[in-house]
Length: 53
Image (cartoon, rainbow, N blue to C red; front, side, top):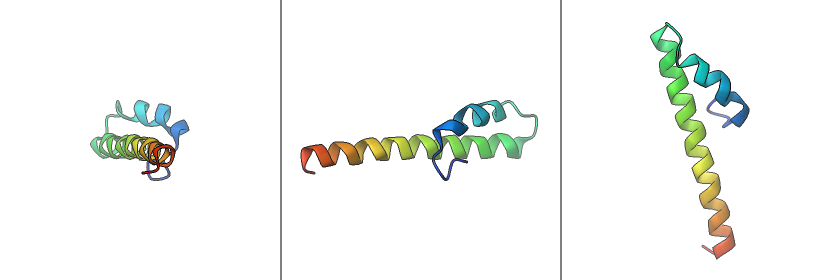
């Protein structure tokens, strides 16, 4: 879910942070980090286009 950067997946992934299984929690953390990174990357790309960078 995090690899594709789906914002819709955030709610599901945030629920997974409370899962009793450590691998599920760890996977959710990684996926949420990926989504956050993709969002920042997208904002930076838009800014660069607007400013000619």
